[in-house]
Length: 354
Image (cartoon, rainbow, N blue to C red; front, side):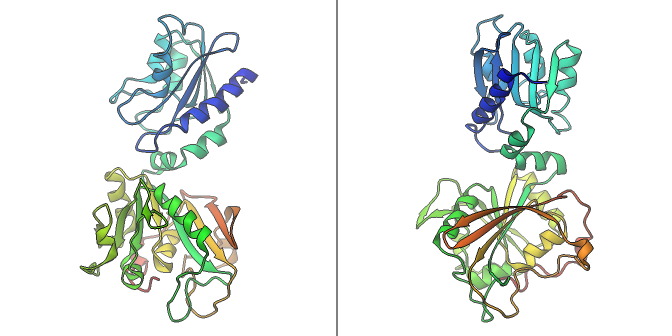
């Protein structure tokens, strides 16, 4: 069981990890404690190709100063050699006597560091503050565990579950605080995905903005559907080139994005595309912006998601966030890794999106 000093150090390590950039590698923090619980050194991972958090912390100590110490790490020390060496080996060679970590590394190549440490005679404790550590690197964990990017499906809706009025108009269902929140979340994603139906109906720019100013990080625009992108489409003026994906196979889409190094996908493609991701079991998070308006009519926010009976309902864990007059439901499916049906049975993703 972790000591009070180790628990405090893990809280600090999680805060240090958050300083690192979100990218292909996970955000990781490390605190090295002396035998009496005093902090000897701290470190965090600053991006691909830089020293991992454990090595960053060890580098701040004089030779031999880590002997008998405890390393508190947010993620199990890695066990593979890439652009840097195995952290498990670095810790044991430095004389670290104990390692406390929050999360096990699910990577096929990078996992196994705890076993390597134990084999070297290091005492290992796992699971300290795992929930807080997992929240920080949730998207990276999905990519490692499921072999695809983390997927957030977003929509805006009226109180009665409509995405648009019967004439197709939908700007703006929600108010400015909700729209600003959307742009902040777009900026945290690697890619933003819409179908050609949404593209042709709304002509979205698919940028992340603060008012009219582009935010520093822009998601890569991805358009799904066989219909061509108009030559004057706003998305063609995006800072990044558009990825056009004519194939409606969502596994193929996510595989392509994964191979491009994309780990966080933001789906804003309208009812058809949103429903397809949900029906396929490929939505890890749902963001539903709910406005206090009634629209009625036939333009529902979702179509068929494969639920034929109440017993098959998709169960969610929801956090509620007020945004001006609107309400944001941040929902996670209780089983994101469920098996899903053949995508060939899904409707055409390029049609009927708004």
